[in-house]
Amino acid sequence: MKKKIFYAVMALLTSISFVSCGDEENKSSESDILKKITDNQAFYDGKSSDVEYHLAIRPANAEYEDEGAHYLDIMGGDFQGRFDLGTPLLGSKIDLAKPAVKHQFSFGFSSGNDDFFGLDSFENSVHSYIADVQYENESCFSSGYIIIGKSDKEFTLSLVGTLKNNKQVALKVAIPEKDFEYWN
Image (tube, rainbow, N blue to C red; front, side, top):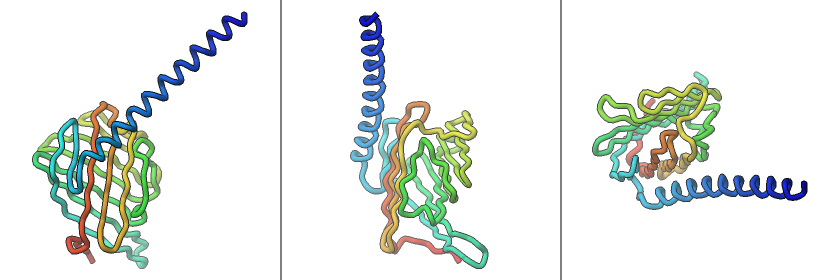
C-alpha cells in the first residue's frame, strides 16, 4: 500500500514538473524574442521587420466624460496594425491571455484582405480572433503581455506573446513627442 501511494505521489510530482518546465520555456522564448528586436521593429511567425508608425492622441474631455485615447497605426513591409488604447491605460502592463480591462483596449494586425489576429477588450468583456477563428469571451493569446509607456517626451509600447495557434508575436515602438498628432 505504501509503495502504491509513493508511486502515485512521484507520478504526480513528475507531471507537475513537466508542466512547470513548459511554461518557463515559453516565457523564456517570449522574452528572448523581445530582446532580439529593437525599437520600431515587429516579429511575427519567425520573421522580424522594421515598422513605421503614426500616433494620434485624443485628449480627455471631462465635459463629455471622455477619458481620451491613443490611436497607434503600425505599418511593416507586408502588414499593418492598429491599436486603440484608452488614455488611462498608459503606464500599465496588461496580461494578453486575460486582458479584461475597464478601458478601451483593442488591436489587430492584417495584410491586405487577410486578418492575422486581433483582440478587443472593453468594460471587462473580451473578443478576439486568429484569421477566421473567433474567440468569444476569451483571448486569442495563450500567454504574453503588453506594456504601454507613459512620458511627456515619448510614447512606448512593447508587446510579446504566443497566440493560441502557437505563432509568436512581438513589437517594440518608441515614438518621440515631436511625432505626436493631437486631435481636438
